[in-house]
Length: 188
Image 1 (tube, rainbow, N blue to C red):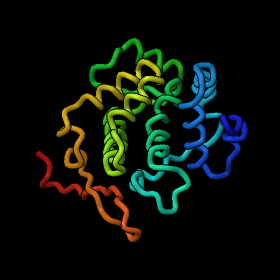
Image 2: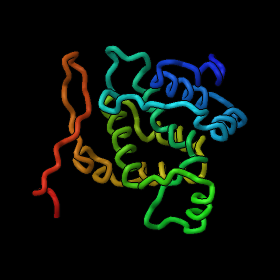
Image 3: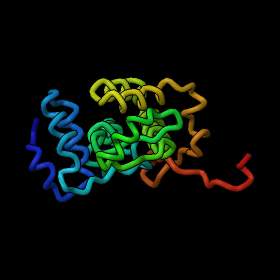
Image 4: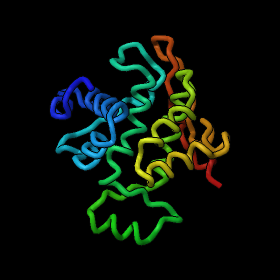
């Protein structure tokens, strides 16, 4: 590992700090991963890489793969402090999470987050399945199950259209993801 956790936490560029922390988590052993999960959020602000630019390289400090992996690993690193509320969730686990003052996260927000990562990987020419498998392999059981459930969805349920996304070419000639405006006529 390059920088120490203290050095990463102290980095002024909070997007770079998240990527560096994710790189350390990904390359680290179980002891380091446990230290990151138990210490989360280290009293620091963490900023996601710009999801619209996951496939871009111009002006980016990190590769698309590193930025995508960092965004996906956020859930694993923060797993001890977050609880994903799903319709079929275990009520006892929910009550334990409430007692532990976990941040309650709506599963639909997480699905949109995973869709942007999945489609960002596709736009970057990466194998999203391999990315999701690599991250789920080093995640807590709850995060692993959620990530794998998304990855196992039929293609149509993780498509650009399903999440109102589209691709656009930016001024640098690179692919960016964008949100399609939602209109009331799209409701059913």
